[in-house]
Image (cartoon, rainbow, N blue to C red):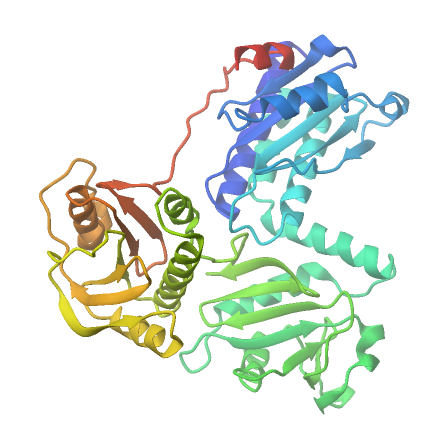
Amino acid sequence: MGNFSRQLCIYHALEGLREGLSDYIHPSRVALIYALTPEEENLRIYDPYDLLRGHEPILEELFLKKKIWLQTEAQKLSHLRELVKFENLKLSGLISFGGWSNSLYYQKWFTEHHFDLCSTGPIERWLEQATRLLAQDFALESSLTLGNTALVLEGLGLHAIRDYIVDKRNELLGLDTHLRIYPLLKSILELSKTKEEGAWARGKLAFVEPSLLNTLDFEISFPQEEQPSLHNIKHVRKLLTAVQHTEMKMISDGEKIVGISKSPLPKSSLKADFRGSHGFLYLDEELICSFQDGVFRGSNREPNLVVLEELLLETDLSEEQRNNLLKVVTSLVKASQSHKHGCSLILDLNEPPLEDIAGQNLERPLNLLYLPHLRLAKSLARVDGALHLTRDATLKKFACLLDGARVSGEDRSRGARFNSALRFTARREKVILIVVSADRPVSVIQNGVELTARCFWSGSCFCEHPSLKEWLQKG
């Protein structure tokens, strides 16, 4: 296989992986460090989206000084399908996986560790499959399979989740397990899409290894010959209403619904927690992923307030004031998202607070650190207009109007709430505005600029593959 063909193989694998991960969690970048042979000059890097920039010191330490990529066992591999795995390096902000193979001596894949990722496990299994498929492409030396790898990696979400669950359960119980994970995952998605009397599913459904069912105390158990089949989605959906808004769980052995219990689940049990329009999947107490609209997602659905936290660190607020304000804002944002109504929050860090904000004044500001006042503020957030919060976490006004002159960067596709926030902050100092859309996105705006705007990267299949040493020198 020629050098251009190898680069084309890598390009297709990386783009398929990037597209798949972007659908699963958020827009994601991917990079690869690889070597065709054990010689150091052949250790190369393909990073078209600059994912690894900023990590130069640790990469130099690991790859050029400690030479962690050299592996004598890899030279003994004879079969093309053999792979020696190299687990996650656990670098800050990155997830990685790779290994050694007969056809491609060494490869290490990297992608972003997003703040709201439920579990790194499925992502690691995804990167493992990229490692295997690229090694296979290099072994076959055929241009006919170039597009296949990209397509497989792009649609690997369900399989990556399944592989991770199987691996974890094998660690806990050994290889002799009877729960078939693929059918369970598909049943969960079907239940999440099935309404009962116009309502989405709520309640918990647990899948327990059949040999461990005798460890549970059942509130209700069904005779074996009358146990509802898990494949009868409509029937199972009706039964799920019996455990909604309770601490009880419907129990399945993977084939049938065997009863209802509130006992702690035995080890290696899967639990689907249906919460209306979305839900969460757990293995024991580990959150694996969420699901919504008939697909699994990697996000834990926590609001993205990392940017706000960083902004507050740059202010003159005390640590206690920062923590209190962040706690109050997080609670208000979550309430707005869960009830699916948009809202705007004005964080006025001026001392004294601004008086020129038009809105409904309160005779006495509400202390939002007091839980009943916070609950009232969540209700007031439903009213048109913004909440005016001060630096000491009090509510000064509600139903505030956001006025201002036109600014560059407005986006008509984002609606009046967002664009009004841009205008409002452009002419006011020490003001941060949080805009929560009805469809969940959260924007943090200051000085007329959205600080949480997503970046979209452009890469090229003709991007260079320099040696790692050359790449480090250019950085």
